[in-house]
Image (cartoon, rainbow, N blue to C red; front, side):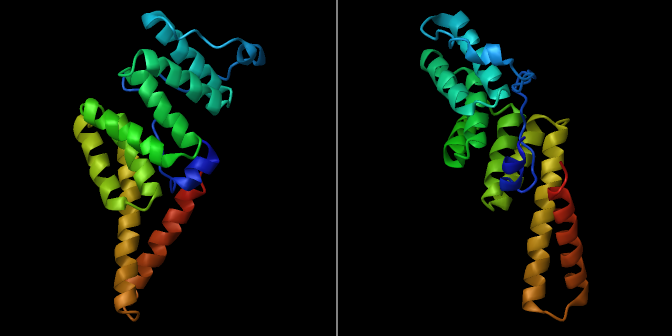
Length: 199
């Protein structure tokens, strides 16, 4: 995840792995590959697969606008394609269009409730907006769907830490002389700061 997106999303990590475990972020495409014409998305499953692969290459080559355009062309042919929809959500996030990305991941959680990745990415976007309680609920859903999903566990820990910070801050605001709460508030803020500065 890009550093700017990481800062926007409060240090939480989005999954770049599709529901079927295929990395959406492929190795960087060569300049020659980036100059190739876009895949034809006018015909059936093969064209959709070509559009998906080409969109992944463009994303890896740091051309998210072009990748999004190609993903949308593929979705015009196969509007329910999980891989293209997931990639579209990632691209919208990277393009700092969180409202649209949220809509994509919300739809994915409705259509594929058994998958953890859409819940995780939706939670990250909502946490970036300060909606920590909803983010916590979504991460818990991700973990119900996939109990071994380590990234969701990490993000849940980060969200819970931020919720604890809020609670300590509220305690201090109501009773500034409460030293134990002040100490915990300071510790939680220091911990959060250290997790945001990691690469």
